[in-house]
Image (cartoon, rainbow over all chains, first blue to last red; front, side, top):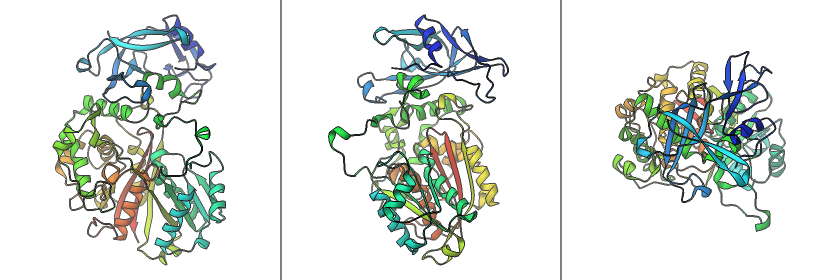
Length: 129
Length: 371
């Protein structure tokens, strides 16, 4: 399970409210993920949090028939995916509510908020839009 | 540390250079110490150094060590540098209570607090190497198409080379394209026979000034070009997943050497997976981007062929002995140029070598030429 840092806490706090907030750098006009203290590339000190709707397209994926590590034993196949948000940044996630042979790069995907109450964490997975 | 010392002796004996001539030492991480590694090793072998460095480039560590050593010698810092990579997991084990806390299945990923991987990748099962490399291959398929039988040829031709190399793990076991495609799917589209073969071992080289190399036992191999590019750790955040850092490091090395690609007699390309080789061939400029499948179809990649590639089997078929896996490519190329390879390519004078660390994220290229 993720352990939020002081820098990334707003992202995880939002997820618990089933909202997605990521950083934006006004000087470079670009959204930033993962959370940082300065904007990547320019190192501008102007990052601010903005809400996005989380819609995106599937950038890439794999169907892992062998567990990627012991904690996923019995969870095969794992549908590992990278989603590109409409705002630009990419997000590593898992796909849900889809058969492996229906997955296509470029397909529209929508966020699924997965609460893990005993850890006080919400994970962000994706399903076909 | 013990392996490092034994390999250092083997490399110096092979070169015919006295331990007393060594005044540089370059290494990767070792089991016994998280820090102060060069001084720990210098103390153990009793060789003082003017240059001691720890390189942290994963599978590119070995190639990265070679050019750093050459640069240090060129700057006049030292004359003879040991670049040694132990790679055997067979070693004394501590009592149960003192076992390292690091989880072995993390592979190239870090689960330390604050690591972006720990926070944003590992919770979704995206860790180690198989999944991320498969995601690269999937994206490649979406942009350029994917012919699994063409890509499988890389494994098949390298296996042919291993079958001419008695030291290879898979010596004596030829395979066909059908065998590769029938092997279990590990992470779609990567089959088991497209994934590196872990083994035990170690490898190293001695880098020396031209004067000293001239007096060593074998044909000296000059490091005439190198390039390095390091830009991201996790493929999720790569600017362009399909243009790997090889597209920067390889032209840098080739330009520095002042050669044409046609001058290259053999290629030793880091092969953790078949997709790594395919993309490296493209990104190094041996063919157009997206035409790698045609390239491996149209060329014979065996040591007898028109484009000899990983002539002792590569990590796919010679075996990957941990960090020494990257040194395998340096040693294979060096042996070819020296004329000492098991599957020797005739009239081999110029070699192209790559090292690849992380998930196609840190790439070193070398040009080696016979003196």
